[in-house]
Length: 107
Image (cartoon, rainbow, N blue to C red; front, side, top):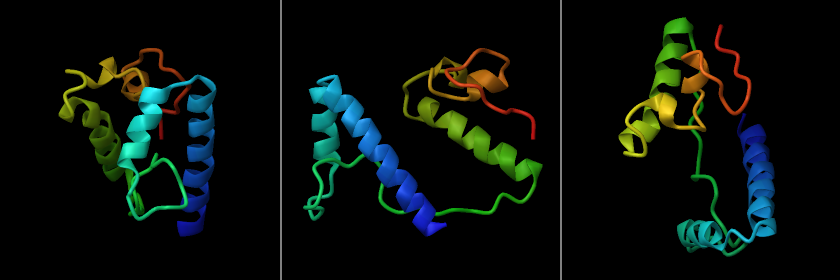
């Protein structure tokens, strides 16, 4: 899984950074440059956190816990007071509201 995760992060980081450059989103690019680990001299920006810790999802209850944890992150950071108010969250889909993309909510 390590190679696949590395490839995914590399591909998406390049696409996001190209998107931001094309739109001259310099404030965001400056923040990504600031977040870059100083010893990483082969890149200008840091989009993804270092490392990954995959876990095997063993059942519906564990899946619910992980989805709920993810949905609560913007609330914990103080960005919104309800997960459905975070426009990038699948919490909207799970609440029966339209989201940015279609999400399979039944597993």
